[in-house]
Image (tube, rainbow, N blue to C red; front, side, top):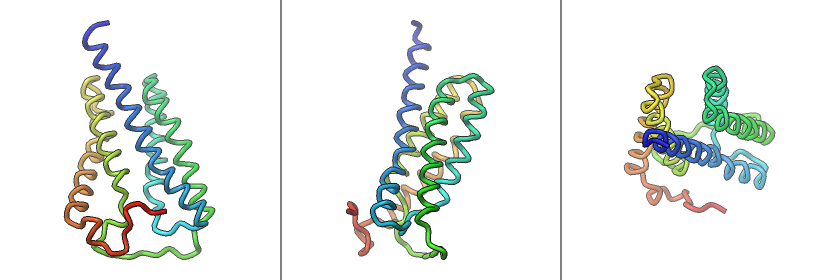
Length: 167
């Protein structure tokens, strides 16, 4: 196997690993919703946008015949749809919107996972010379860096109500 083939295979595996890791960050939210029978501070929008994103990438993967895109986005679409259904099941009639200078409502693990996932897909697309893979992942890198900046500016220790390891 030539060097480019090994590198591409390694990068493809990294993309799948990081992406599945990112999708699995919702499992803790799922467990929390089932345990508390409420949505508490869990946000709906990330589940919805990620599901739409997965379905779009799945379509592109099928058109392109790219097994890496097909596998990870099939798993992602199933998981995100599950998260949405559980969220809707436990969602109260009224939504609460709270504006604070707190990172309590941001998921640090999702931020890190999104950074690694978006970066690996951008590199994968760059190696394939496919701007349709590279470019859409650049905002994920940018928004992850912004969220990391928020974690630096508003560290969890400053938030009296925030518990790093919620039970």
